[in-house]
Length: 250
Image (cartoon, rainbow, N blue to C red; front, side):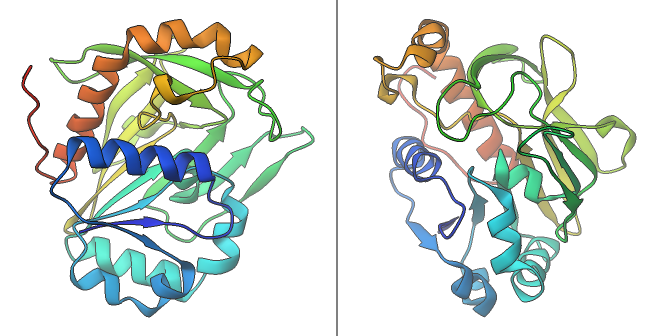
């Protein structure tokens, strides 16, 4: 059973995209949305194979999950659970968030989950815009996976993880090609496993709006890399202990 957080702050697009790719690569697996009240009640932890916090805006996550909700998530992971945080969900899972420092959208603060004990800093590839796709990029990544050494995937507002390689129990799975900063992490937390991603490997470029003037610039690159994107996402699931469906070309 895979639970996907869906409450205030979660972007409908990120929720939809993560649902679509999971249905494609894990057709046998049950997916359930989980709201903040349910997170706090903690019943989900009994049958969860994975908890996902998608993209959106992380400040509303703190309002609803601080205290009890975050404690339930930490207990679940430390007892052997698996957690995937994407974009806002990745910021949220770091000890410190530094977003748009000195800019109009500035968010700076500590966070309770702190699966990554350091700082999530962003946006890294382009300034973010809540209303348009102006900050979207095709993020070029270099990974540790021999079958997907490089790929391009959708990016919008995500962080890098400062000095990630210095922390014990943390492995950098992918770096931004432009600046070699950590883009995707694997973290061991208690008996559990956490993957945090500053990019959106769940986003299918073939579903993004081809008429959008900002997306038009990046869609060709994203479409070209689509098979690599899916393979990369499968690798992340494997690290999280999820057995994925082998498609015919593997």
